[in-house]
Image (cartoon, rainbow, N blue to C red):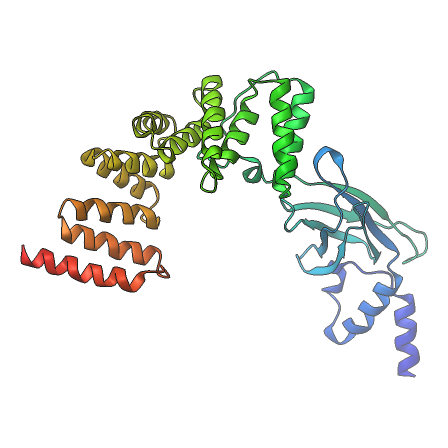
Length: 354
């Protein structure tokens, strides 16, 4: 008799929302949930798009309820489509998780409301588009030191498309195709600042394997600074490249300009300090390193290394030992940690002997 009564209760029970379920006594919840899910006829379908409204395949899409509990997870097909079926009325969140694609996570709210004269027989099917945004940090020049700096140019559309294609190829690790697209964009519009800045930066960062890359970067970044004298990334890239090529006077001038434009850039002051130290302008070098350390909140190991070397050269042994200790604190797994500890001991002994 009890079984028949329970069965009748379940058949008569309309589809319940998460809010209604919370009011049902715990001993009845298991049976009610099974019945409600079985009656769920609503669905959420959609497509995930990327740049230029292109579908993005193989992206995980997660469905959560109004309490942020995961209900289901799907993966987009070759056309960027996904589907969640067998749902009941309620509020949901659909979250695209584009791991490893260069896109940012995107969430969209969906409300399913089924209306029917017969309880539990209605259905609501919602189709949505999720348009992903690129993580702009991945589009930036290798020497980007300040976010949000915009330089406006009237760029011919073919050059703009080639630039975007080049950036996308570089983001996808297609180096040869990326370089070719950026070069073609500059053939169309030789003063294209973003293309000059990006291609110059890409060449310069590869200079360690081939000096000609430094030289190509120097030419392109010099042109970029001529086009936009207030561009922080091209100024930093140019100063860094000048330093690598041994053009120390030029590097000091360029990096000093940069610190006036990007006064809160740790890297700008660090590399200015290195150039000044190489030129034996020790007072200014120390000042630049200390400013870099302040901006970096004491957490940048290379700044402590540079200060330690500067103090050691000046026979300021206690200060040098202190900076080497801070270096190890910032980089505890340094390859030469034991040698550095021995050096710290020697420096303290020298300081005591003075």
